[in-house]
Length: 402
Image (tube, rainbow, N blue to C red; front, side, top):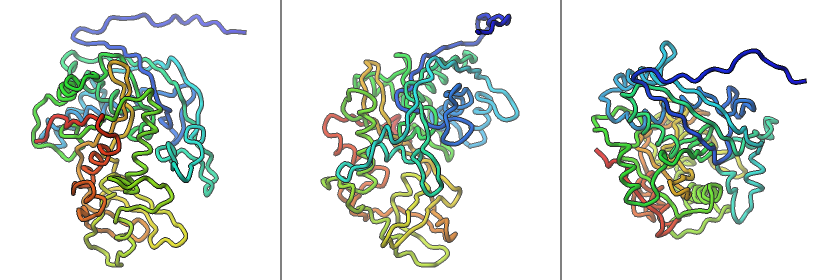
């Protein structure tokens, strides 16, 4: 028997004076994993939580506007006023209403079984959610097809900043875990999506960074970032699969005329360098992969000359400055996108197992970098993608560099 309640639904009230209220209908166009209070879990009744949305928006606001502050303290002061802190409420109020909780999916359903000729496919992006036999951990369950309504209320003085933040989040971000590799990618109202015509798109990207740059603090920025869009795809999943194949090949160094062979060894010089490290406590090491994100885990395999985990000396993790995800444009077309954010570079790495630490410099003499024209590790991402996706790709520098 259905229960009846005497509690009346809340009545709509107009926004307070000098405040703006906006409501956006948003679709999650790729599977959502994580985002719940427990790692690798999605809360079935609340797959999109307001706290998670606030965290993502807060991050993209910082990426857009961190370039305008002379110190981290000034940046945090404005961030706290707008988004709040543990001690105070912020100026932005938001609520989430899930309109479609989607359907269950798993890593194995999405990626299938790795093939020796084609490689792991989407499994290269989804491996954190796979089953772990060593720890008897089952594979994580994600959600496909989630839709939700996001309502924001904020002072009119912040209208431009909030609209730009929403545009950046919907275009380059996502919801849940592993968003830098496409999970939880989003699509929203047309007015918040990038234009499809290249000249209009270039202006749109520049408008996100229209504020004046100053001496920026040590934070990740959109200003000065590089963006590559591959050719149009039929849907988001196709674009995602193309990106996974590119990234798997790039991480092996199978680029610039070298065909991707999943069962073949990697071409980067990093592994050879690590295999010959001395036991000295501190020294300089020339590596390239740490610039793509840390930690890096070298698993123990038969015949391996090196095993262990590299992490940044200042912390246990450095988020990758490279974002790979499908982007939905205003004409509803979908393109695979690679965004290389302007981010502080790691100054050193530490070998977790021994505690040895090393000053880090890029190995510009690496054969992979030479084949790509002598660029650095992050420049190599864009150069390799140009060759992978061909003449129909679009490349932009967002806002220029200071």
